[in-house]
Image (cartoon, rainbow, N blue to C red; front, side, top):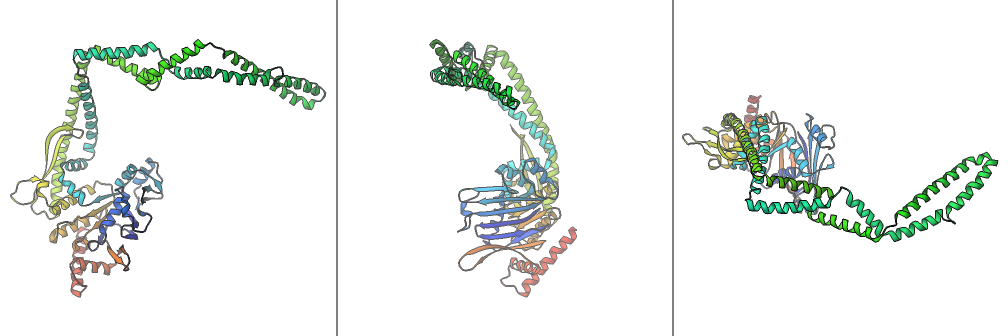
Length: 559
């Protein structure tokens, strides 16, 4: 459940905090008061594009915070899976917008847009005008049907998508390998040339690194020899350290024979002498190994040049070159046995196509059964939303195969007696679309684990009895979900469990948008304004009381 919304320095909002409640939260206000800013701030937290112009004039940044409670523990498990922090049944989403950039956080930790989307989809569902307009697109109809079917189509969709991907890949591969005998001959000549060039080099993994080390040592042998020789003279020559340490060993040995306390130090210096002698022998051996002739350097250089030439053509390393050689062998084998290979590919392709068609068929059968159920339930939901004579159906036709199957799904509706069902986009008005989407949301609410639903423009193009039907539906929905609704209709506002007023305030120099929670008296006065009263007369307040009583009766009947 959404506990609170905190907004700072966003557009006309200087700083405001709203604490929401369970049930139906209604927000009303004059046109232009900033209701859209409120919904926009929620969308910003959920990853909507952030424009620096949204930052309030004179402020350095804008900040929006949403705090949710997680009583079920579902979000806790998801945050653990995403390796994000969790704080005692609370989830905080924040977004800070600065002129140069914006930063999103979950419980204080910076997150990506993808992570934010994953979490927000579990927390709330926003329904705005753009969403009910999406009903004009047939693709949305298919999404709604599959969402209604749930697990029944989920596995089939996944299997269909995998088969489609493999089918498309093999189709492209077959098309790319299409060639006549002359083309195959030319291709084979190139492949054999490359194969022989690599084979002739007889490459060994790690050989290039070893050669580079040898070449570096040979090319710098003079400097290395001078330094190694100087070191040897310091440690093992006639005047080197070995001479003096040997003398020290003998002298301390004489002393240790006279004083047992020197035995330890005598052993230490003897060990140093032994280590130094070993070092000098190794250094001497190394200096002898440095002896080579110019032809050896030339051989190493030529070998390196060959390897580097192959790297330029076939891969950045010897393992990559050898892998390329394996690919060459596969291509050669395929071209030399072209007809056999093509036959095998065709058989595999036919098998995949048959499997894909079969899976699409299974998916289509499930969709047709679920379409009947969805049509029946949605028709009932629409009747409850004052569609007095509605006929609704889901039309499924076959189309070209796609990752989601071969079904072309379209919602068909008739809202007047005697008229045939026609495509939704050709019949429904804006107000009807919003009610249809509300009906869909109501159907999905029972199977949807999202606790919070936000509605904006749900009352577009409706009034009178229809407004009461929408109000009743929202009230029923708020019995199982937290509902936040921005409205201008008194019938919907009267159903509020909690009522907020959004209004502009000015001190003559600046204007701010403020959000206030209304008490019973304030809610009644706002209802009178929504009913069209120019002033809060006794008659206006009485009308507001009547509409409030009517809403209360509806609530009691629901309970």
